[in-house]
Image 1 (cartoon, helix red, strand yellow):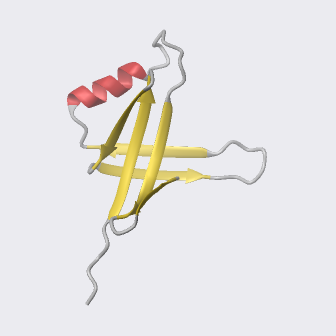
Image 2: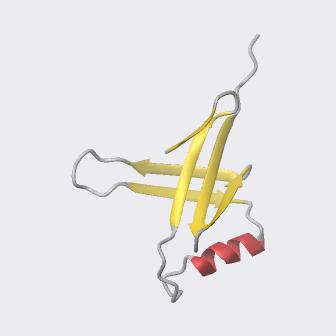
Image 3: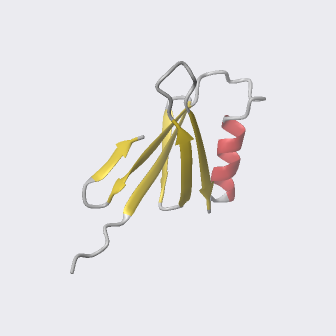
Length: 87
C-alpha cells in the first residue's frame, strides 16, 4: 500500500531585497488567472504566525509606510516527493 504524499505550500515575501519564506503554517490560497487583459487576482491567508512576524509583515507592507520600494510575494505549492513550483 502506498503512503500519502503530503502537500507542501510555501509563501515568500520580499521586502527591501530581503526574502523571508514561511512554510509549515496553515496557508490557504485562492485566485483567478485570466487569459485576457483582466488583472489576475490571488488571496493568501496565513494562520499561526507569531506576533513578531505578523507585526513585521503588517508594518513593512502597509500603504502608509513611506518606503515605496515594490514588495513581492511568491506562492509555491507541490508534493513532498517531487518538490514545489511557483504558482
